[in-house]
Image (cartoon, rainbow, N blue to C red):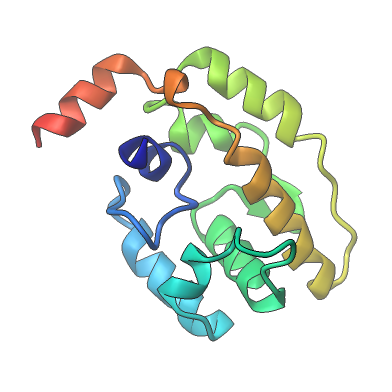
Length: 140
């Protein structure tokens, strides 16, 4: 499950190694910009509200990996970023479900929007992993 969470959604980018070459530097840059630590991100589900800074970390991260821009999900972004790792059915389900989330236009609300998107994308399941990709990654 840890491998899948890392590869499938990048949203546990702090607690696990990532499959995306650019994700590490982007994660570090976004944590610095938000003024948080890896532990803050790892602890995000321990309360009902992880706080504005953690939510803004996700805004920065999702913008920089190409999932959101201008307070909107970029059409086809989930498929482009994760389609090679998860099944086509998972891509369709995540796009149908998560693309319904809309944002207001203020900066503070864009952090909330990114948090909602990250929560939605965490709905990807272990069964959604493309089995061929999973095998290749485990071999190194």
